Image 1 (tube, rainbow, N blue to C red):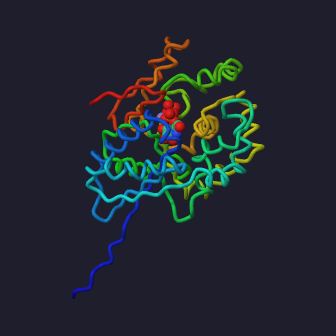
Image 2 (image 1 turned 135 degrees about the horizontal axis):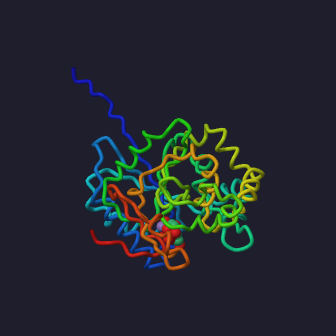
Image 3 (image 1 turned 60 degrees about the horizontal axis):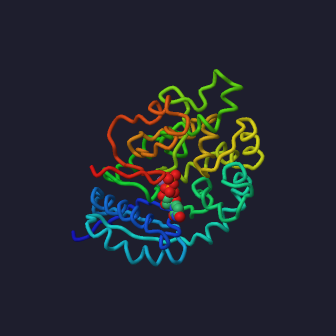
Amino acid sequence: DLEEKPQRIKRFHALMMFTKVNKSLNLQNKFQVAMRSMAKHGRFLEDEVLVLHFVSDVGSQELGERMLHELLLDATFLYEVVFHNVDTLTEKLFPIVEAMQKHFSAGSGAYYSDAIFFLSVAMHRIMPAELKRIVQLDLDLKYRSNIRDLFQEFNHFSPEAVIGITREMQPVYRHTFWQYRKDNPKSHVGDPPPDGLPGFNSGVMLLNLDAMRRSTLYNQLLEPKRVTQFAEKFHFRGHLGDQDFFTMIGMEHGELFYPLACGWNRQLCTWWRDHGYGDVFQLYYQCDGPLHIYHGNCNSPIPDD
Ligand code: UDP
Ligand code: MN
């Protein structure tokens, strides 16, 4: 008979912060490298669509709409583009993350506009319930592998895990947890891998929104009282937004995090090597195994290979 099976389209969601891009040639260059390399290596099946979400202001959105088609000309896969207004998201986010901002934001006050740096932390409350999984990606990335393979990592999460994330590759948290480490010399907090807890880097994150919504523990840890308790216990004072929050709760509740292999977020920044941590730097920086994504963090140049 001629009856056709309905083809069910499968969507893979990826989100990038995309603000003030129209005002920065530096960010535009990073955007080009990221999109071209993603297009070059991306392979999806016929009934699959990569949905690219951008959190933008009006100016950046206009630039993104103009540039994306050309940057993705080489793509062999289907894609859709969704722009989210940064102000609309900030309005929803601020009440949820306001309390943590004072512990993990630069400067003294908790600025309204800084709330967006905590989007990943509360993404499960911001995005519609139909959205079950999303990966959040920095713009300063260069893809060397098929981004579809990154989504397969969701299937390796333990039942308790809510977020997949790579470890931080500089001794920045060895520095941040200095006081706690001094008071607790036997603790592994801030120590290098493989036995230590070096903290996380937020350049590539797998957010299992479904699991984040379901996890009683994760949602308790978002409560202002708990955040303050943790920050006091660890004498934690940071300025890196979501990655500080995840690092801090990860010190006590590692089970919430799926340890994404270092090759999925191969950070290149070496700032802390030259700022007092040269003796231990390599212990943190080393990353063996397949190199899937370069992360040119702190404006580090990315190799051509
Ligand atoms: N970003 C942005 N506009 C800015 C600065 C940053 O949209 O003016 C986004 C962009 O996606 C970027 C991410 O925020 O990749 C994190 O910033 P960045 O990668 O520069 O931080 P680093 O990885 O060097 O710590
Ligand atoms: Mn980055």
